[in-house]
Length: 209
Image: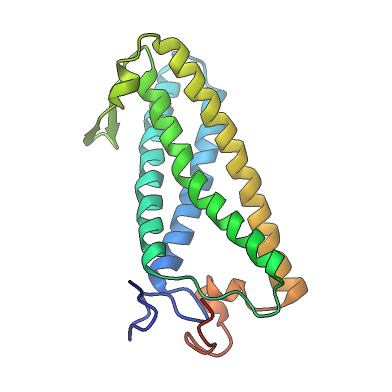
Protein backbone atom coordinates (compact mmCIF):
# COMPACT_ATOMS: atom_id res chain seq x y z
CA UNK A 1 0.00 0.00 0.00
CA UNK A 2 1.46 3.35 -0.99
CA UNK A 3 0.42 6.93 -0.31
CA UNK A 4 2.60 8.30 -3.11
CA UNK A 5 -0.34 9.46 -5.21
CA UNK A 6 -2.44 11.00 -2.47
CA UNK A 7 -3.69 14.55 -3.02
CA UNK A 8 -2.50 15.71 0.42
CA UNK A 9 1.12 16.09 1.51
CA UNK A 10 1.10 13.51 4.30
CA UNK A 11 2.53 10.68 2.19
CA UNK A 12 5.91 10.66 0.47
CA UNK A 13 6.19 12.06 -3.04
CA UNK A 14 8.75 11.43 -5.76
CA UNK A 15 10.80 14.52 -4.90
CA UNK A 16 10.42 14.81 -1.12
CA UNK A 17 9.12 13.12 2.00
CA UNK A 18 5.60 13.83 3.24
CA UNK A 19 4.89 15.80 6.39
CA UNK A 20 4.28 12.70 8.53
CA UNK A 21 7.73 11.27 7.69
CA UNK A 22 9.36 14.68 8.17
CA UNK A 23 7.69 15.21 11.55
CA UNK A 24 8.64 11.73 12.78
CA UNK A 25 12.21 12.11 11.50
CA UNK A 26 12.94 15.35 13.36
CA UNK A 27 10.89 14.46 16.45
CA UNK A 28 12.67 11.14 16.94
CA UNK A 29 16.08 12.68 16.20
CA UNK A 30 15.52 15.42 18.79
CA UNK A 31 14.30 12.97 21.43
CA UNK A 32 17.26 10.66 20.81
CA UNK A 33 19.76 13.50 21.27
CA UNK A 34 18.01 14.39 24.54
CA UNK A 35 18.02 10.75 25.60
CA UNK A 36 21.75 10.45 24.96
CA UNK A 37 22.35 13.50 27.14
CA UNK A 38 20.23 12.02 29.95
CA UNK A 39 22.05 8.70 29.66
CA UNK A 40 25.56 10.12 29.87
CA UNK A 41 24.56 12.60 32.61
CA UNK A 42 22.98 9.78 34.61
CA UNK A 43 26.25 7.83 34.60
CA UNK A 44 27.92 10.66 36.57
CA UNK A 45 25.31 10.57 39.34
CA UNK A 46 25.99 8.62 42.52
CA UNK A 47 24.58 5.12 42.49
CA UNK A 48 21.68 4.75 44.89
CA UNK A 49 21.03 8.49 44.98
CA UNK A 50 17.56 9.95 44.51
CA UNK A 51 18.79 12.06 41.57
CA UNK A 52 20.03 8.96 39.77
CA UNK A 53 16.74 7.18 40.47
CA UNK A 54 14.76 10.11 39.04
CA UNK A 55 17.05 10.32 36.01
CA UNK A 56 16.59 6.60 35.40
CA UNK A 57 12.81 6.95 35.48
CA UNK A 58 12.98 9.69 32.85
CA UNK A 59 15.49 7.67 30.84
CA UNK A 60 13.14 4.69 30.78
CA UNK A 61 10.11 6.77 29.81
CA UNK A 62 11.95 8.59 27.03
CA UNK A 63 13.42 5.31 25.77
CA UNK A 64 9.99 3.71 25.52
CA UNK A 65 8.73 6.81 23.72
CA UNK A 66 11.53 6.40 21.16
CA UNK A 67 10.60 2.73 20.77
CA UNK A 68 6.92 3.50 20.15
CA UNK A 69 7.65 6.35 17.72
CA UNK A 70 10.31 4.34 15.87
CA UNK A 71 7.98 1.38 15.36
CA UNK A 72 5.33 3.81 14.12
CA UNK A 73 7.83 5.41 11.79
CA UNK A 74 8.90 2.03 10.41
CA UNK A 75 5.26 1.07 9.74
CA UNK A 76 4.68 4.40 7.99
CA UNK A 77 7.87 3.94 5.96
CA UNK A 78 6.76 0.48 4.81
CA UNK A 79 3.46 1.98 3.66
CA UNK A 80 5.18 4.95 1.98
CA UNK A 81 8.11 4.26 -0.36
CA UNK A 82 10.91 6.78 0.04
CA UNK A 83 11.58 9.27 -2.76
CA UNK A 84 13.96 7.74 -5.33
CA UNK A 85 17.68 8.39 -4.98
CA UNK A 86 19.18 11.11 -7.18
CA UNK A 87 19.86 9.62 -10.65
CA UNK A 88 23.54 10.61 -10.47
CA UNK A 89 24.15 8.33 -7.46
CA UNK A 90 26.14 5.23 -8.33
CA UNK A 91 24.61 1.79 -7.59
CA UNK A 92 27.17 1.16 -4.85
CA UNK A 93 26.29 4.47 -3.20
CA UNK A 94 22.59 3.60 -3.33
CA UNK A 95 23.22 0.24 -1.70
CA UNK A 96 25.37 1.86 1.00
CA UNK A 97 22.72 4.51 1.68
CA UNK A 98 20.03 1.83 1.88
CA UNK A 99 22.12 -0.22 4.32
CA UNK A 100 22.76 2.86 6.47
CA UNK A 101 19.06 3.72 6.64
CA UNK A 102 18.18 0.11 7.47
CA UNK A 103 20.82 0.19 10.20
CA UNK A 104 19.33 3.37 11.66
CA UNK A 105 15.84 1.87 11.76
CA UNK A 106 17.24 -1.28 13.38
CA UNK A 107 19.16 0.64 16.05
CA UNK A 108 16.36 3.09 16.83
CA UNK A 109 14.28 0.05 17.81
CA UNK A 110 17.03 -2.23 19.16
CA UNK A 111 18.55 0.33 21.57
CA UNK A 112 15.36 0.96 23.59
CA UNK A 113 14.50 -2.74 23.41
CA UNK A 114 17.89 -3.55 24.97
CA UNK A 115 17.26 -0.91 27.63
CA UNK A 116 13.85 -2.43 28.36
CA UNK A 117 15.52 -5.85 28.57
CA UNK A 118 18.12 -4.50 31.02
CA UNK A 119 15.45 -3.08 33.32
CA UNK A 120 13.40 -6.28 33.07
CA UNK A 121 16.37 -8.41 34.14
CA UNK A 122 17.38 -6.18 37.05
CA UNK A 123 17.44 -8.06 40.37
CA UNK A 124 15.98 -4.92 42.00
CA UNK A 125 12.72 -5.47 40.14
CA UNK A 126 11.88 -1.76 40.13
CA UNK A 127 8.61 -1.03 38.30
CA UNK A 128 8.57 1.05 35.13
CA UNK A 129 5.86 3.70 34.92
CA UNK A 130 5.67 5.66 31.69
CA UNK A 131 5.95 9.31 32.76
CA UNK A 132 4.54 8.33 36.13
CA UNK A 133 1.16 7.51 34.60
CA UNK A 134 1.14 4.21 32.68
CA UNK A 135 2.51 0.99 34.20
CA UNK A 136 4.84 -0.68 31.71
CA UNK A 137 5.42 -4.44 32.10
CA UNK A 138 8.78 -6.15 32.30
CA UNK A 139 9.72 -8.74 29.70
CA UNK A 140 8.56 -11.99 31.41
CA UNK A 141 11.43 -14.19 30.19
CA UNK A 142 14.00 -11.80 31.68
CA UNK A 143 12.00 -10.85 34.76
CA UNK A 144 11.84 -14.57 35.65
CA UNK A 145 15.41 -15.44 34.66
CA UNK A 146 17.24 -17.86 36.98
CA UNK A 147 20.35 -15.67 37.15
CA UNK A 148 19.00 -12.15 36.85
CA UNK A 149 22.29 -10.48 37.72
CA UNK A 150 24.08 -12.16 34.82
CA UNK A 151 21.17 -11.46 32.49
CA UNK A 152 21.11 -7.79 33.50
CA UNK A 153 24.86 -7.46 32.94
CA UNK A 154 24.61 -9.03 29.48
CA UNK A 155 21.67 -6.82 28.46
CA UNK A 156 23.45 -3.74 29.81
CA UNK A 157 26.56 -4.51 27.75
CA UNK A 158 24.48 -5.10 24.62
CA UNK A 159 22.64 -1.84 25.26
CA UNK A 160 25.95 0.03 25.52
CA UNK A 161 27.31 -1.45 22.28
CA UNK A 162 24.11 -0.57 20.44
CA UNK A 163 24.13 2.99 21.81
CA UNK A 164 27.63 3.69 20.52
CA UNK A 165 26.77 2.01 17.22
CA UNK A 166 23.80 4.35 16.92
CA UNK A 167 25.98 7.38 17.67
CA UNK A 168 28.46 6.30 15.01
CA UNK A 169 25.77 5.75 12.41
CA UNK A 170 24.14 9.08 13.30
CA UNK A 171 27.43 10.87 12.68
CA UNK A 172 27.86 9.04 9.37
CA UNK A 173 24.29 10.00 8.42
CA UNK A 174 24.96 13.67 9.18
CA UNK A 175 28.22 13.67 7.23
CA UNK A 176 26.51 12.02 4.25
CA UNK A 177 23.72 14.63 4.35
CA UNK A 178 26.27 17.47 4.43
CA UNK A 179 28.13 15.87 1.51
CA UNK A 180 24.94 15.80 -0.54
CA UNK A 181 24.12 19.40 0.35
CA UNK A 182 27.49 21.11 -0.08
CA UNK A 183 29.56 18.87 -2.36
CA UNK A 184 27.06 17.09 -4.60
CA UNK A 185 24.38 19.82 -4.35
CA UNK A 186 21.64 17.39 -5.32
CA UNK A 187 18.80 18.62 -3.05
CA UNK A 188 18.75 15.44 -0.95
CA UNK A 189 18.49 17.39 2.33
CA UNK A 190 15.59 19.41 0.89
CA UNK A 191 13.52 16.21 0.79
CA UNK A 192 13.51 16.15 4.61
CA UNK A 193 13.68 19.90 5.34
CA UNK A 194 10.36 21.59 4.43
CA UNK A 195 11.70 25.15 4.21
CA UNK A 196 14.45 24.38 1.68
CA UNK A 197 12.23 23.38 -1.25
CA UNK A 198 12.94 20.33 -3.35
CA UNK A 199 13.31 21.84 -6.78
CA UNK A 200 10.27 20.99 -8.80
CA UNK A 201 7.58 20.06 -6.31
CA UNK A 202 6.55 16.87 -4.60
CA UNK A 203 6.01 14.72 -7.67
CA UNK A 204 8.34 16.44 -10.12
CA UNK A 205 10.61 13.48 -10.87
CA UNK A 206 9.45 10.14 -12.31
CA UNK A 207 8.93 7.27 -9.93
CA UNK A 208 12.09 5.19 -9.91
CA UNK A 209 11.18 2.80 -7.06
